Amino acid sequence: MKLKRPEVFVKEDLFYYQMPVRALDMNMGNHVSNDLYMVYITETISQFLMSHGYRLNNIQGQCLVFKNIVLSFKREIVYPDSINIMLSVSHVSKLQLTFYAEIKNDENIICALSQIDCAFINPQIRRPVKVPDGLQFINQAETG
Image (cartoon, rainbow, N blue to C red; front, side):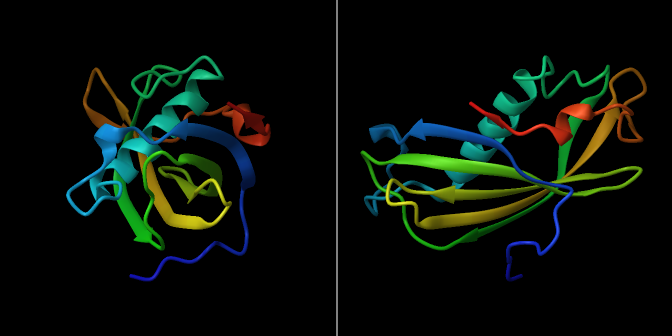
């Protein structure tokens, strides 16, 4: 599946997060291991939610879970770069919230694109529920 930047967003450039690449993140090919891109994106979503008083496991009493992830690699990331992740919301429906993320290197070159379809789970009944009402934080841009 080829991932492209959405033409329309619910909220573009919602949250910006920068983090250093650690020496531990490197693999035998001398670049960041592919699985860590998802770790970086998850951390960015987590930091975004925490900036609004929420956690992945408690957004108005519901848990945010990833139900579908598309990750498109464009360029390798190497140590000791920093990465810059821009998080946007590309879609919201009754049962789903979709994040779009761009990972860029120190030279502002896109290294990866990602689309993450999220659902909300009620922890007591362990079943999907509708997207919580009143997620006003989606309408506010932040930097972390």
